[in-house]
Image (cartoon, rainbow, N blue to C red; front, side, top):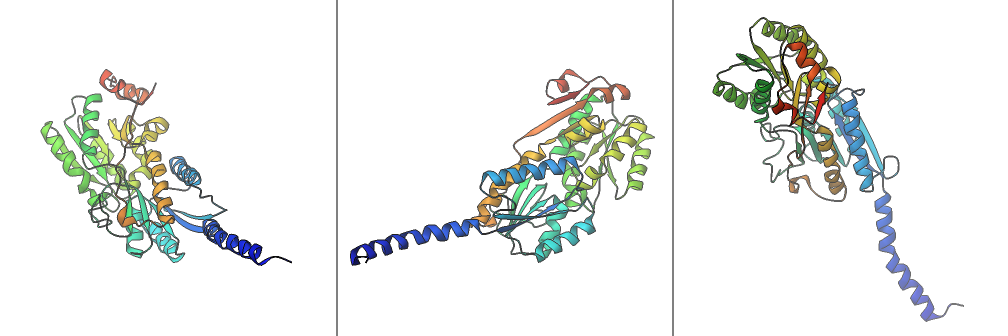
Length: 333
């Protein structure tokens, strides 16, 4: 028989263990995370970003298939497809949603004001009302911006270094997907162009045909250059832009390193997007553990990179100056 004192000791020990058991069960409860990507499913950059996000989540104790179920949808730069997937993800009622890009964040913003959303690679979250402000977002959305408005002016500065003698420069964007319908970046770009005695051109394009029209027209102008807006539509059509720019002999600068390294674009300057997405995982982790997006400040990028393709420069008739070579993170010979 068990003595009364021994029984009480066992009972007390069991009671003390109950919170630990309950905590372990809570930890192992499967949580659902939605992911809305703005690129195609076969896009290498998108795959790298998602891989880093999953790896970072795993480092915080969340493993897909064990205590986490990840629902991933790929918008492919298509606004209507993105909106459809946003409705689909919200209907699943996940614990939190990761939104890549402005179109996906906008679509989710329309669908829910309660499910926590962490955005990545969004330029201007205040303008469309995703958040009330960067230090205190104030609602169900927070995240990581990819660039500030001044980046268009910086890209123009680098383009004029590698292609001196330009007279006019166009900034190409899709008003349906670019922040502020294109005005967010264009204001600083226009001011920088005029201060450098360059003619700024606002070139909007919503389709392959319109991209071709813009570049063909620009190629007919003497000493013309191109700045490509950080915009997922433009990213998903970057191969066409690079190809058309080469045919029209237009020096161009892009916000994505991969366009220079893999598609023979001339020059790129922008944030490290994989790093931005990787940094979002701790925010998702905090929310899964009870934090509120309203209390998590919007973060700015911390890693920028520049790449130049010397082969493309030579074809266009330019010599890459030492000022570019010394600062470039990657030089393609």
